Amino acid sequence: MQRWGEKPYYSLDFYLKETFGQKIYKLALDAGMTCPNRDGTLDTRGCIFCSKGGSGDFATKQAHSVTQQIDDAITFLQTHDKKTGQKYIAYFQSYSNTYAPVKKLRACYIPALQDERICALSIATRPDCFSESIYDLLSECNQIKPVWVELGLQTIHEKTALKIRRGYPLSCFEQTVKELQKRNIPVIVHIILGLPGESTKEVLETIEYLNALGIQGIKLQLLHILKDTDLAKELPTLSLLSEEEYIALLLQCIAHLSPDIVIHRLTGDGPKELLLAPLWSLHKRHVLNRIAHQLKEEQVYQGMDYQKKK
Image (cartoon, helix red, strand yellow):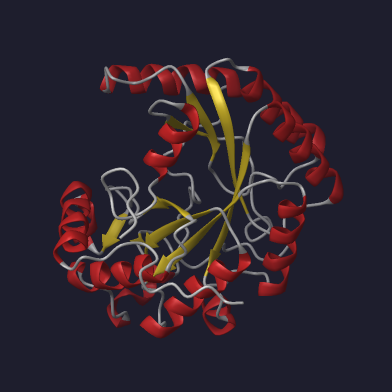
C-alpha cells in the first residue's frame, strides 16, 4: 500500500509541504471577472448550480486591488490561525479568471507574482476562455513562479453537461488541457459528485478519463443546492446523496484515481447563508473525519483499483 505522509491519498497538503518545505495557505482573490455563461455570450443564467456570487463565494471581494486583497487575506488568516506560515498561493477564484483582455489579466497576475509572500498562482477558469495570447501570458508567468490552472469540467457526459448548462463540449476541454500541458502548466480539474441523473458508473468513467489525460490535480466536489439558483427550483424532485452515499462514492473515486494525481479537495463548502441542501455538508470537519475513518476502516487507498491504460 502506497502512502503519502500519514494519509492513504496524495493530498494537497502533502504535495505543498513536499514542494515548498512548509505548510502553504491559499488566498482566495477576486479579479473582477465574469463568465461567458453569464454575460450573454453563451447565456445569462450561468450553470444551474451557480449562485449569483459564482464559484467565488469565499473570495476576498474585488473592491480592492490585488495587492490589497492579498494583505487583507493574510491579515484575516493570521488573526484566525497563529500557525500560518510565510508563504501563500494567490488563488483567483471568482468566475472565469482568464475571461478578460490580456492587459487586464496581466494587471492581476503580475502584482501577485511580484509579492514575496506568494509562492504560486492558481487560476480558476473555464476551458472556453483562452486564446493564444493568454497561453503566452500564462507561460510567461510560469517562468516567474509556478502557475496552476483550475478547470471546471464537472463531468465528461454530454447529457449531464447539457442538463447543468455547462456551455462547452468535451472536445474544448481536451484541447485546452493539451495546450496547457504543451507549456508545462499543471492542470487541476473540478468534478461534481451527485449531479442529477449520474450513476456511480458514469462518475467513475469521468475519473478514468482524467487518469488517461494526465492531469496533475483534482477537486472532488459534493453537489450543493444553493438559494436563487435554477437547481434550487428542482429541489423537491432531486434525489440527493446522503452523507453515507457520498462517502461511499468518494472512496470509489479515490480507489480508481491515478496515484500521481494530487487531491485538492474531498468535499467542498456551501456558504451557510445560501445552502439549501444537503444540510449534512455544513458539518465539514465531521464529514472529513468520517471520510478518514472510512478510508482506514475499509483499507482504501488512492490507486488501488487504478489500471493504467497502455
